[in-house]
Image (cartoon, rainbow, N blue to C red; front, side):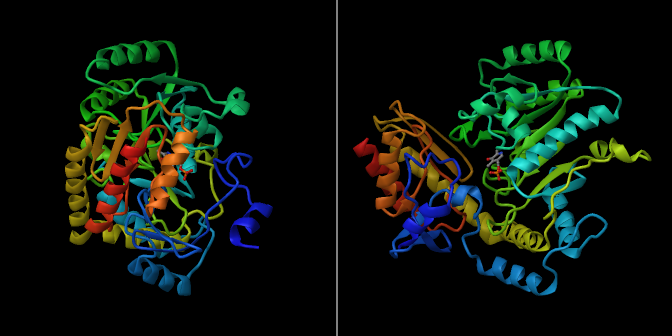
Length: 421
Ligand SMILES: *Cc1c(COP(=O)(O)O)cnc(C)c1O
């Protein structure tokens, strides 16, 4: 039996209806921007394996650092114990985070990082003697698949069985030039009628909503208004952090800084699962008390796993290197040029870009998981490019180390796709 057949026997894949999609492609190797399948075919990883492997797959520097850590300390309980990889990571991460961030809480993935952000917001008010039981979120947001994260997400279209168990959430649209005044009035109304604890938002780019982008000025006004009413600002930067937008964090484009920041994808350079929820001293202080029950009683077995911390530390070093910053600038400029070439094509609708994130909408109605989407996906793979269209949106979020030649291959494959849809 080959790997695909053996896979079918016992494996259940994420976000998959197995009756409709039963064939999984075995990937046996990855290096730099390239994935290799079991038949030896290469694919350029145009989405950095869900935005994680931004410094390239199996990056030698990261492997060396994690290898060395592996010889020293593999795993230890993070309650009552601490270790150098976590301490060093906290020092280095705080240096590049928005300067109001002071404390880091570790977990394992993006969903848990937002789950913790939501808990921080609810308990922050609870500890301060005020019961606030409603969260605020953007329409079309995605924040993960655990219950709190699902509740604030509105994109999870297949959440029917769970909806009765969601926490209470109010929604506002993302800001545009035209609707910002209406949003601000809606917020004034909401804070007067509901006990809004926190606002969970993907700053500037909504990843799962097909890289939908909004402007920093509008978001800034929303955050200003919410801050006035002591609504805790929880930035979900799981997708937007670590250089992808052209700055270390999308929040760096915005004057009002978040109270809490969630990060995960790309934190460990794609090597190991880990997440961090950072917060301000003020948030931390609301949990700091002689009363034990005011603490944040949340924890995961692999909290601050030393190997994952070592990978993250090495990743932060690479991110801040001149070489990586030059790569980000190079890809940003390259996407701009590609956009000039395709934006007036009759099949192309809106296009958008922030840093190395580029997206174009096809002028065609498409289902998120429909046949045309599958046809497009197959076309990309046949041409040696791994891209995952989201509905009628084609987007690129390739590793920072993707070469000019590899970028051209991605662009050419997209241009061909425009001719076959
Ligand atoms: C992917 C993602 C999550 C969920 O992260 P997981 O690691 O898949 O649980 C949450 N928020 C945003 C913005 C994401 O892109």
